[in-house]
Length: 635
Image (tube, rainbow, N blue to C red; front, side, top):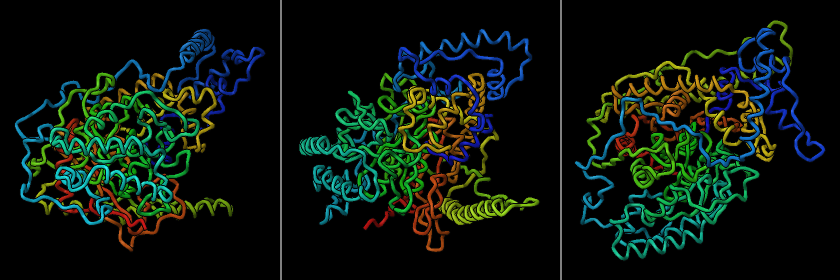
C-alpha cells in the first residue's frame, strides 16, 4: 500500500476517526496496557461505565445517548465485549480470510470467456516469428543484456545464444554489487536459482522452449510477502525477520512451472507501507538520495536497476503504482480477482492484488498470462480469460481521458497571517507556504509531460474522448482498508509487538491499527455499500470507452483500487535539467519529487478483466515513445 500518508490520515479524519480521540478508555487500548494479574494472566478489564459509553459514542460519531438508553445498553455492551476474547484466543493466522468474499463486478456483468479466434500466449506455437530468418546475436559483454526485455532475453535463450545459467549468474552478481547502494534485497535465493537455471537450460536443449512458454529460463524476483519454502518471508517488518512457511505461494509455484528462475526476495516497506523496512530504506536508482517509494520498493528498484528481468509486486492502495512512478518501471495492477494471493501476506482481503513490475507492457502480459486464474484456494479469484494478443488492432479501441486531471489546477491558496501572529506561528506559516509553492511548481512542471502524452496519442491517430470519474467520497471509503489491516494484524496490536516495527510515527501502521479499532462495524458496512455505488458507476465509464488515460494521481488511484479495476503504470519520459529541485528530505508522502533526470509516469485504466487490451494499448504507446528503454546510470 502507498498513498500520500497525510492524505490517508485526512481520509480517516473525514470518517470521524482522529488520533486526538485515542485517549478514550475503550477496550483495545485498555487490553494492550493491562497489567498481568497475580496468576500471570491479564487482570480482568473494568466494567464499561456510562462515562466510557459517552467517550465511545463520541468516537463513533453517534449520540449522545439519554441516561435511560445508556442504562439499557450497558449490560449488552459488557456481554458483547466478553465475546471478543474467545475469538482472540483462536490466534487466527494472517492466512485465515474472513467468511465473506469480495468480487468487483457489477451484478449483471460476467467475466470474459476464453476466445481462441486469435492466436495468443496460451497458443504460442500458433504465433509466427516476426522474422524467422533473423536470429538474434548475444552481445560480446553479457551484462549489456541487463536491461533487456523478457521477449529479447527469451529469443536469445530459445536460439541458445545465451544460457539461463549465465543470465542468472549475471543478475546475481548485479544484485550483490548494487544492493549496497539501493538496499533492495532481503534474501538471495542463489542455490535455488542456480538449480532452476540449469534445469531450464536442459529443457531448452531438449527443445521444450515453445512448450513451456516465454518465461523459461528468465530470472525474476519476488516481493518478500510471497512465501518461498526454505527461505525467510519477512514481510519487511521487525519481529518477522525469521518467519518462514512450508509451502510456496501460488504465484511462486506458477512461475516455477513456467520455468522462470527466482533469484531474490525483495524489500517492502514494513507490512506493505512505504519503502522503509527493518534493514533500512530502499533507494531510487535514478536518485539514490531518495527512497524508491513503496510498498513494492525492492521489486521496482531492482527492475529499474537492471538486476532482474521482472519482479512480482503487490498493491492495496498504490504499492505497484507508486514505486513504478518513482523508479520508471512498467507495472500492471491486475483486475482484483485475477491472480490468486494464496501464500501472500494479507493486508486487506478486499483490496490486495498481486502483479508484475517489468520493463514493458508486453512483459507484463507475459507474466500475467503465467500467474492468473483460480487455484482452488483464494475464493476471490474467478475463471476469467486473459487473452493476450500481440497483434490486437488497438486503433479500434475507444480511448478516453480524465479531462479534469489534465486541466490546470485551481489557484494556490496560501495561509494568510493571523491577527497578533507570533514569531513561531509566522515561521510555521512561511514554511507551509514555501512547501505549497514547491509542490505546485513540481506539479506544473510534470503537467507538461502529461499534456505531451495527449498530443502524442492524438498524433498516433487516437480520438481522445473526455470522461470524468463519478463524484463520490472515495477517501471516506479508505478506512475499509485500515480496518481490514488492523484485523489481519490484530495480535500485533493486542500483544504490544507492534513496537517492534521500525516506523512508529502518527502516519505509520502501529498508530493506524490502533485507530482502526474504533471504526464502528455499522460504518464499515455503510462504506462497503458506498463502494457498491463506486463499482457500478466507475464500471459504467467502460461502457463508453475501452481504456482511460490519466495522470498517476491519488484520486483515480483510490477509486480504482476500491473498485478493483486494472491499471497499467508506465514511464512517460525524464525530467529535464530545468526541473524543480527535490526537497532536502524525502518524507515518503509524494512520488513527484525526483528532480532533474528522474522519470515521470502515466497511467492507463480499463474495465474489469480487460487487462490484455490494457497491455496491448500501453504496448503501442511504448512502441511510439520508447520511454521504457531508458535506464539509470548506476556507476
